[in-house]
Every structure is written in C-alpha cells, then in structure tokens.
Image (cartoon, rainbow, N blue to C red):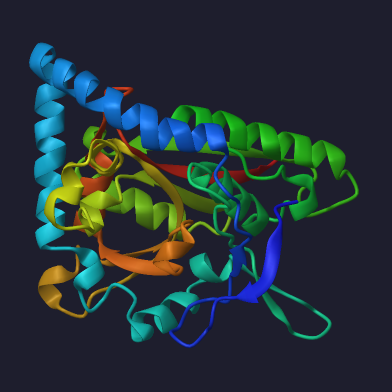
Length: 309
C-alpha cells in the first residue's frame, strides 16, 4: 500500500492528523524534462498556439484573468481559509466525519484521508480517500499512481477499483454486493444555483462522496510574485494544471446576504496546503467552471455514490 512515515501533522490548528507522505525523489528523466526540455519547448508551443488558435487564445486570456484576479484576492489570505472555528464545525458534520474511522474497541479515531505521494497523483489519492470512506478496505485499493487527469477517466477507474475491491472481499459485508455510480457535473453546464444544489444533495447523502476537479490557482492565485509567474513551466501549471481533491462539507456563513454562498471545505491532497481549507462556494464555482485547454471542456465536481445491488 502507499508508504507513509510515522510523522503526523500537528493537530493544533483544527486539522486532522493525516500522515505525511514519504519523500519520493524525482526521477532523473523527469527532472531533465521539467528543468531542461520544457522551459525551452513551452514558450515556442504556447506562442504558436496563441497566435494561430483563436479558441486557445481566448481561453488562455480568460484563465490568466481568473488566476491574476485570485492573486489579488487570494482565498489563502482570507480569515476563513483555515479558521479553527470553521474547522471545528466541519468535523461535526456527517459528510466530514465519514472520512474518520472510529475503532469500536478503544475509541481511537483514524483519518481515512491521505495526501498524494508525488505531484500528479492527486486524482488517485482522491480515489483512495473516497473509497475508504465508503467502506472499501484500504488493502484492496491499489497504490496511488498518475494518469487521472480527466473526470471521465477518473470515473472509469474509480468504478473499476470498487468492482475489483468487492470481488476480492466477498466476506466483507461493508463493500460486498455494492457498486459505484458516478455523476459528472461540469461547472459551465449548470447555473450556480444548480451547482450549489448538487453539492448539498451529494453531501447530505450518507452513501455519496464528492470529488472536485478544479483549477486551484483560481482560488489561491499565482502564489509567487515578480517574473516567476511568467516562467514557462510555472505559467503552464498555474493556468492549465487542474487538481483533484475530496469535498468534505459545507459550513453556512453567518451573514444573511451570504446564505446562498456557504463555505466549501476541501481536503487538499497536496500536503503543502496542510489539510482542509474553506473557500466561498461562488469562488469554487468559478474554479470548477474554468476550461481545461486539453479537452476544451470545463472542470467538474463528481458525485460518487455507493449503491446496494
């Protein structure tokens, strides 16, 4: 299974004590690709596409505007981002408590969440978090891997993993005779009200979990200042690099005028963000509505529901 060390995140800021991943050095070939080949090739490719492809030019301009705006108004700089009071409310919600395993013998609580072991493994890490929370045994779920880059592929794989897990654990009442159904809700195919309704619907269903495929930089911005944000590789990652993480719950805002804009709690599978954080639902809607230049489709939330056969 995924190798984790014994060092735990300090639970002094309202976060779950989720094990940090073991350090995995970047392979030499990958280093050469990222630090030698891509910095030279990307400016040429991006420039050519920007000049010759109107759709690419419009999409890139919109993405830059979105991320640059988030740099000015980064959710990471707001009071609510990892507020201890909001985190306390979060862990009392059934939708978030589903990611905590309680031992019947000694009342020990174990997080079912885990961080990605390396860059690009966020989709696989999210699959493991969600399936474990739905009762599928951890030892029947494959180790993290890369390649989960599109919602359709993510759905195909999570259903296959659940099917294989069930077939290998016929004596396990929790996961036997079940199957996984997935529903992709793309940001630009629904209104904001419909998006919020789907979130509430999924989180209120004890047999449902929500995976979020979003542009994180639409929430936190470039996160570096100066000319760094124009470095070809950094520029590409921040504008085009989608991310997968589980959504844990909704915490309502106190202000009456923000009743239709609750805080959405996301457990970021990248340990550098130190666990769960909150973003206003309208900001998340924008991040999910952002276009993936590869597929030319918007990103999405994915409702993952365990059905009894």
